[in-house]
Image (cartoon, rainbow, N blue to C red; front, side, top):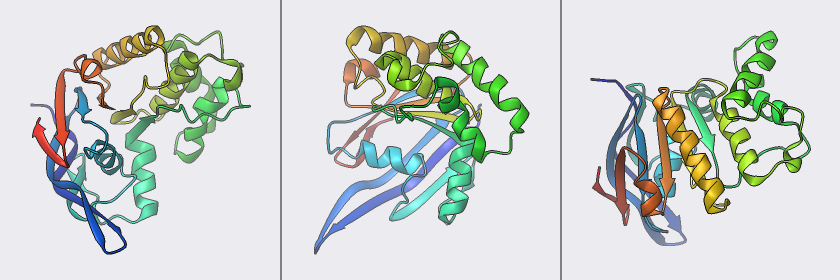
Length: 225
């Protein structure tokens, strides 16, 4: 049996709006194992984005526990969480989140500046990943000179540069046309086949079917996992 990379144990998240309490998550327990390709599926308002923020350590639960590599991180402070995020979690967002007037290579190198990886390895590591996502001929192109699909490939290379335990993708094809979106999904399949653990958050049930397992969330509760 492979080891769990990320786990939530009975996690709840309550947001307060004035005197009103909104339960975004209610008693959610999930396990993500090494090498899995999982889709977290739910409609707008289902709690999937809140769950993604919690397993990505971008938000903290109101109650319950979050574990990374079977170690609880719930009581960690923001600095400790940032260190775990940078080391263990790679993020791919719908809006790419690249620096616009910066080259593809420099965008991929950026997370390494906050890591313990020696500076003399940065260019080689970033170049290798840009070749992996088939952008070896675009190293010096600024991100505003690239197409949407190419920018998402740069974002994926950047997410992988620290060799994270898990790749977390939030609606990764949301800003792409269907053909380019299909190419990004094929890239995810290739990465997963090579051993990358992927969690994709989406409202698109058809897109979710390409994952090996689906976690369905509705009204803050897991209805299938």
